[in-house]
Amino acid sequence: MSLESSVQTLQHSQLSLDTLTGAAARPGVIGPTLDPRSLTTGIVHLGVGAFHRAHQAVYTEDAATTSGETHWGILGVTGRTAKVAQQLAPQNGLYSVLTRSAQAQSLRIIASLRGVAFPGVDTDSVVAAIAAPQTQIVSTTITEKGYPRTSAGRLEISHEGTAHDIATLRRSLAGKYDAGPAATALGLLARGLGQRFQDSGAPLTVVPCDNLPSNGALTRQLMSNFAGEAGNAEFSQWLADAVAFPSTMVDRIVPATTAADQAEALSILGLQDQGLVVAEPFGQWVIEDAFAGGRPAWEQAGATITANVEPFEVAKLRMLNATHSLLAYLGALRGFVTIADAVGDEALKLAARRLQSEDVIPTLTAPDGLDLQAYGDSILERFANPALGHTTIQVAMDGSEKLPIRLLGTVSDRLAAGSVPESAALAVAAWMVFVYRGRDVNGETLTLDDPAAQQLHNVARGIENELSERMFALGNVFPQDVSGHLGFRKAVASHVHDLLREIR
Ligand code: NAI
Ligand code: CS2
Image (cartoon, rainbow, N blue to C red; front, side):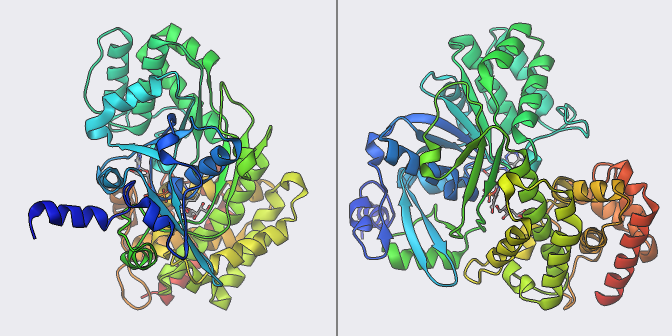
């Protein structure tokens, strides 16, 4: 077979605009609900990972279909590798979402992603896209660690790459635009906003979609710090006046795609889909009603647009994400590969229920009169989805970033109320032993994937019976009101002792 025909074979074996019609006609395939060729770009998304493709991009396609608006195409921007760009470019941005539950699955082709860029080579085109007047929205899913911040919630200017991006922003605002890649996602955003300010000053809305409380206010603060460090008062003022930063609560369980998932999609599509993502049926998006300009009709796609997102954010982070982390660390230590396996264990399920009902719910204000106990039950049912394959080790990653966000707020609140949260103490202890042991009850290795991994290894190393004392010294993880509370320290130390004896 000649090179040309083998390339054609490969192309025709891959989802693309050329193969879309045939693929969409196959049984079990739901085709896109709009013509990808009709779309123009109105959104730039930073962090075009699995979650964006299974959540915001789907909501945006549904909104555009219902409203008939064709100017909400998405330019997806990858992070530190070109991998997703290399996967999606040959597919003209097309990919599919494989939605799975215990009862059924469906595969839907999504067309709202109209381009993919890799900042390593495409920074200038991404900056131009953010500056373009037809762009109304920049959204982000860059993980919790993508927002370098101090404990006071200000830009961590010592963060690797941030100083470089501040210097580049300063020069570009002084009319000395530097080509070349941004070192960080927020640095890329700042440069795009700087170019927009210099070109047109047109308003823009930044929609963060990461699991962070008050993610809009935080992103505003970090962008304001970027502008302040760049020393351009006019840009700082424009940022304050013309750019909105609504907070959001986002929810849909989207595990990392596996080779088995790809094989399943191939059998349905009859084509390779390198951009495949897998997700649960449930989805929720709550967005603060604070936009500087236009936006897709996301409410027509089921999103909630509201003045006050906070109760939704806090309830979701503390009821779902904290329980996820408890199951991830305890489950991984006890040899459970998936979250579904872990929550299928009666002892772990009871621990999850107790965390929700005894520690978390007393700290919450129910959003819109939500029945919090029923909400907790529904979360555990979602975790039990046997078709997802969401692994404990994936949820366990980045614990040094995640625990302060999703678990330690509950601890602080319970301690302030005069109660020691025992289940939260168990979750903290499980994380400490996960870091220290690095293996499960069967002796299988548990890899520590965390931006603070070296620090954690250094601190954890040493004699076992002082483990919790050493870990509590991590000021970037434990606030003083938590690490300084004797009753909580004792509770954690007791659980650490028991877990170390269990996991030899
Ligand atoms: P992913 O690994 O598929 O994508 C992560 C994206 O963030 C990639 O584009 C990557 O390049 C970028 N990234 C990673 N580290 C970064 C850093 N330090 N700075 C800038 N960019 C960075 O992960 P996925 O599943 O898309 O999740 C991303 C985020 O979405 C999560 O961290 C969370 O905040 C949020 N989320 C995820 C859900 C899920 O179930 N996967 C559900 C709800 C929210
Ligand atoms: C998980 C979240 O990996 C994790 O930390 O807790 O990604 C979780 O799947 C989502 O927040 C669900 O909406």
